[in-house]
Image (cartoon, rainbow, N blue to C red; front, top):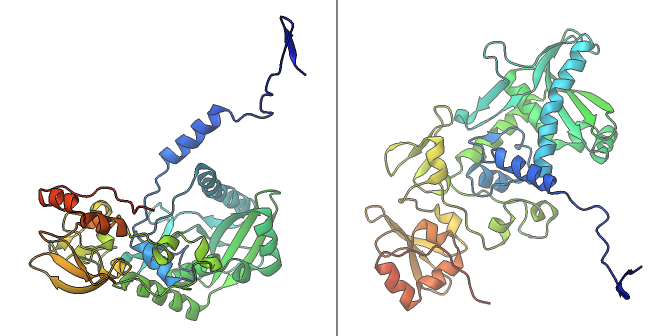
Length: 366
């Protein structure tokens, strides 16, 4: 209905029925800003059940890092906060629960593969009515209604293989024979519990898998070469495996860096002859040279000069380029992909680069 004003009928646009208040945007911005989403320094037990070892390698090498929006961060935070509720309810049921390691005052933590692999267990418990004399590892999870229903129907092993691998890792490293897995339906607060038995062979297999991923010098084979494969479509490494993306520059994508088998997650640098602190690993240095396999979509490594500091690649067209050296492209430039190579061949750009300029952005026309 139009409003009357001075004999004229004014049609006014209807306001949105439920406008999104600015306070929600402010909350979301705070959540993202206040959450540390930097890649973790180790390969986590919560991920070792992933079927694709290539994905795990890219994650450990900080090549494909997944970040989350505010909604997902709230979901993760809720799962963390629910752990205290699980502990309270178990204690209320007469179960003895240690949520932290009495020796450290911190969560129970287990590591392997020179400290490069590990995770933190939710606790240990004694006096569970179903097996009162057995110590159990504790694993707490929250689920959507759909996920919870599938868990009830199939059990942990079939419904949540990543969770099953996680608890097998903890039992193996912690030398515990049982796990009590407790889950909550976030929509109804219904609980599900299952006792899981340690499988020594599976635990050993998972440790071997972690070591294979961690100490591999280049990306491992992927689960599929089909970009539309369901496990590839939503993988954070999809653009690296099936697209044109190049891994970012950091110490873990550099051929000079090595994860060492001794120490607590120690990395060494062959270029500088020293260990690399975790924070320095995130930045890299001017002597970064890509692990050749990470540039395979640009060309094949055909030559190298350690003293000159370069690796030479031959492109499918037959032309060559170098990563490093006086006339070569820096790793930061190569991280821009094929477009940087095309731009570097431009006569004007080549002259500017010869004078010390670098390519900081590049895009292939069309």
